[in-house]
Length: 395
Image (cartoon, rainbow, N blue to C red):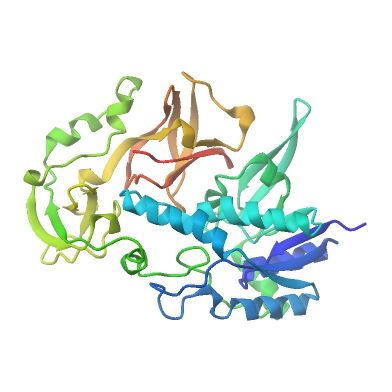
């Protein structure tokens, strides 16, 4: 009897080719389109995924001769992903809704729905790989980076569990994007030349302040320009050892008197570390970037130039309740450390680092200072090309 696979058919080329490959491999393939968002407030014109994706997904399913249906998870998506976004921005943190969407929707409620439909597996068009190995008599599922290093999406799946991976398939993980396009083109799929989706998962590209103002009020405050030579803040960034982990992981806490007021903003919670656009500061030799925000005082601190020392830190901290191990068998105990490769954002090149576990969490300490470490984002750690754990950056 054929194994049944429910594919999350999004209307994009990647999930379309994933469905084709699975059918070619002899699976009983069923396509399901997830409706997770209805509102258009703050969404830029023409970028809403729901505009034509359902039609494209239907056409692809018809072409591949596989069953197709839609499910509406919009209430759960709002509660688990969008409300979390609003809450994090309100605290001055910058969340990653795509990671949350995968953990809470695609590989949770969607997986549950697929199992209700009698599926043995769910499949998506992610550029990553799964390998199942036996270790000490137990089957362990390894989450590996996609072969296409420019498209590797393992970062977005950093919060998955062994139970979720067990039921998941990633058919295009061994392929290059160009190969996927060629297959779709040769099959004359409606999604063959569709552009990759951008913006917030299932919402689309948004004007972030407008989108956030659905729940977060605008509040005018000052932008303060911080000079590069404030050695009192940066003098401890010259070395890395286990004695000053806590100090190295501390964000820079500036005072308004450290710099000069150079403009105004409509709410510090609308800005994120490393942001360039939206400051509205002209007449500078180099662009200005956000280097810190003070939510309580409603101040945005900026610095001139990509090399401003306020943009760089050697370490970050993750609270113990926000550390997630995909490989539970590799989980470190308090007092232990591990040499790993890490990234703090999607598409960042992996960075050599050391992971230290302490009583109240974990410190991730990089060999080279990292630009734009941002609270609320996910840090991920790898051994070679396997993603073994992740955590929400607290500081």
